[in-house]
Image (cartoon, rainbow, N blue to C red; front, side, top):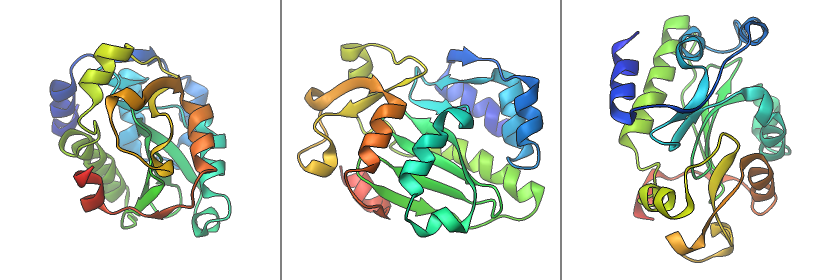
Length: 207
């Protein structure tokens, strides 16, 4: 186990919603996803970390979500993307199969950020480790996760905390607007509400 993953597990504690990864899936994603990510799948399967704040997911379950968000955008023709992780609030992390880049979609307010590409297997593995560091150090809980978990209950593997009405329709990000909803259904709905725009980290941190 690498040092970053050990620190990640120490930071986020016990996993929830564990799902073992079939051997056929490892075969399918060999040379499509970084070896480091497949190693994490082998160690803990697909599951939630930090009580459900951050999830490593089965990309096959979110193919419709990826299609909905990227349809009609330059990303659709730029690469083949696989959703590999998500946050409790709908920050989505897509891996570019050809470029070795991570496309981050903040679905709750329709923003994106595209990382630099990576070519070698070492660079791609490092990018997966950087994703874990991002989860540990950035404000992916929006300052609301602990309260949402206490008030609404723990998420299941197919759920997310969703703002209702959606933030793109206006209004503040506050606890009283959160509901537990089916993640696939809600993420597809959000994709229909606003066009993707560049993801500004300063804007995210100010919310």
